[in-house]
Amino acid sequence: MSRVVLTALAAVAMLNLPRAVLAQEQPHAFVDARIIAVNGSDVAQGALVVHRGKIVGAGASVSIPANAVRIDARGKTIMPGLVDTHSHIGGGSGGDASAALQPEVRLLDSFDARHSGLRRAVAGGITTVNVMPGSGHLLSGQTLYLKLRGAKSLDGLLITTAEGRIAGGIKMANGTNPLRPQGGAFPSTRARSASMARDLFIKAQAYRDKMQKAGDDPAKRPTRDLGMEALSEVLEGTRTVHFHTHRHDDILTALRLAKEFGFTPVLQHVSEGWKVAAEIAASGAPASVIVIDAPGGKLEAVDLSMTTAPALQKAGALTGFHTDDYITDSRFFLRSAGLAVRAGMSREHALYALTMAGARMLKLDSRLGSLEPGKDADFLVLSGDPLSVYTHVEQTWVEGAKVFDRAVPGDRLVAVGGYGASRNETLHTHEEGR
Image (cartoon, rainbow, N blue to C red; front, side):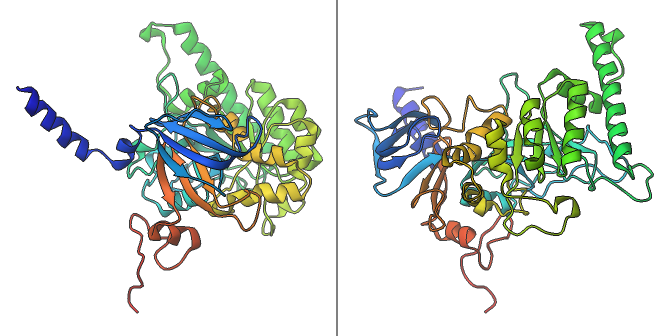
């Protein structure tokens, strides 16, 4: 085949590539912006350079390639994409009513990549999310860590580990959510809840030990058990338990269980974390806080306090935030940091909690959470200071591709709400039926 024909075919192939992919072939430089790197000092007027999905440099003295596309960001603020460690976007499901502990269930098999919640998340500046099944079980299944790349299928959103495994954790819960007054397959007391969880982990230890002893001999291995496989990963430290817990006594029960079986959970919600901040910090367990400005409707969260995040910070615990979307709408995630600062958390810790802390909880901090060279180009362009109520997310970028732009009518509709904004797959920018 001649070189002319090959060149022509290559040109046709380039035309068929997504625009976002083509754009990444040329460096992009956002100049004259305020840069909040999170890991590093803020810069009042600097630049962010990205290329092929990665950050090349960020700060006051960044070298800008001669062939870079320059974007004037004067008056704007650029910061890392937000990491939501606990969300329910995507309309997925977990365990059913057949058992209280279902570690074999995967959110992977029920997630809708075209769900409108994903669009709301990027409108709020969220670029990475831990999507969970519900908390009506002691263990409701395996979670998913996703990059909101704008893909229309789940495969385009998945994050894979260095070992090639689909990244995700496992969801556990205690307190009132898993309790059933009639008992049966579910516990009816807190003590029974803990004993059922302990019994399951003892079985997981036995399964893990048998697998280790069998080595490479398939004849010696126990019958494959999908639930035990997932829990073996927890025991080995390659799968993180995300533990829904509210009351101070339930928090301590979760820590007691984790200590007994040698894993470090991420504590989710921790409404009464301010009561046991020292114990949380001493355990080494991170805590992801939900910041609700109008609490109510849940008796075990009656003592919820906005002082939880600053109390955890003062105690020395790794502290992050989450939406639990729809409990907090993803579009208002930045507000969590503002409210925590109002309650006494430092500004630096609050911004860290939205980004790097979440990345560390998902064990993705080598790839995201800050504007550092070599990390994924996940970032936001804001109209002003991230903690101001007047600030809007103007653009959201994931791995160097723009996935939200408030200047685009369809994206603005998602950001502000209105007819058609919550529809899955297709967004409507005109008024129908009027």
